[in-house]
Length: 74
Image 1 (cartoon, rainbow, N blue to C red):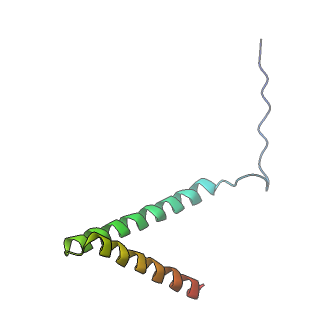
Image 2 (cartoon, rainbow, N blue to C red):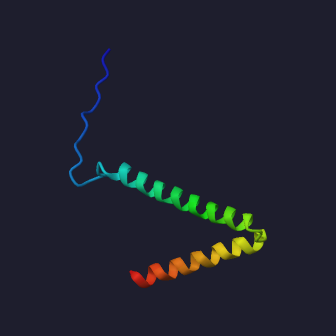
Image 3 (cartoon, one colour):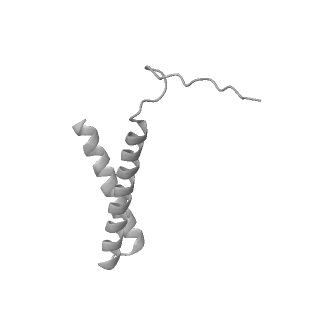
């Protein structure tokens, strides 16, 4: 007994394009890089003797400045 499967329909403007996995990989790489930068900054601040609460505050303020700068540039 043979099972008939429908033929795949080529996506012409409907559905995801072929570049979607590449685009999502780029976003994932950017998020990973941002995480590495933030953790590195935290480690450097802690190594310099800054208390943990102050180090987290410094990184948070830096994030606010970066967000404001991005909004002004766009």
